[in-house]
Image (tube, rainbow, N blue to C red; front, top):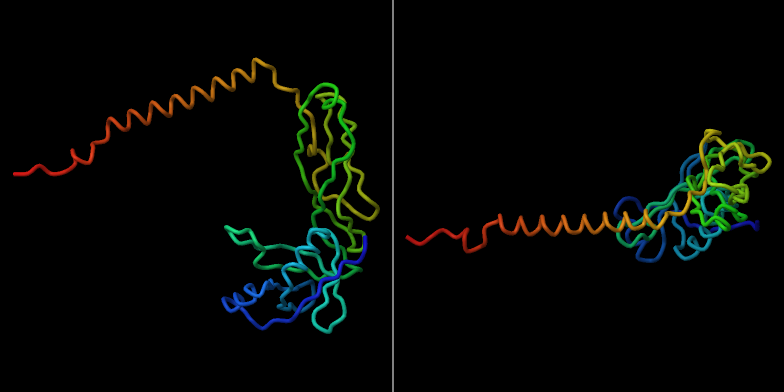
Length: 226
């Protein structure tokens, strides 16, 4: 993968005073790491979004703060606005290339399952990402998982079946199920589900009607004239 470079600027603003940065389409952030002093910075919103689409949380980024040289970081965590979902704050973790780190890497499912293609099964993905330990230089954007081994509805892919790239140790339980295929629902099962939904709708409507009858009207609640 090409080197991903993200320019940044030091910032002195803290607390509510960072709002004016966001109005300028800059995202406040902090850089920290093991044995290194933390720094408060800001990054351009559009540039960051472009880098994040490529890097995710498991690819190294060269963070260039002002006139300083590049610093190797991981995008550790994001805070988002509750309604717009825009990024409001970023945590960057500064790594040491000679020191192992723990992070998460996404799983990339490849191949084709005979249980899905030939038997009409439903592919079930139980785990999307795995916790790993490795040197920063051994990080990869994702780990491939071949689903062609799922030939029947009894087959399972476990953590122990994943072949991790050289230098990467998967920290999850080896017996955990990563993916499987379930049989398609029969017409009887689909019909039974439809009936259950209809019954639930009817029950709700009946409950609403009963409640409306039990509750006094506005006129009934008014005190009578004496």
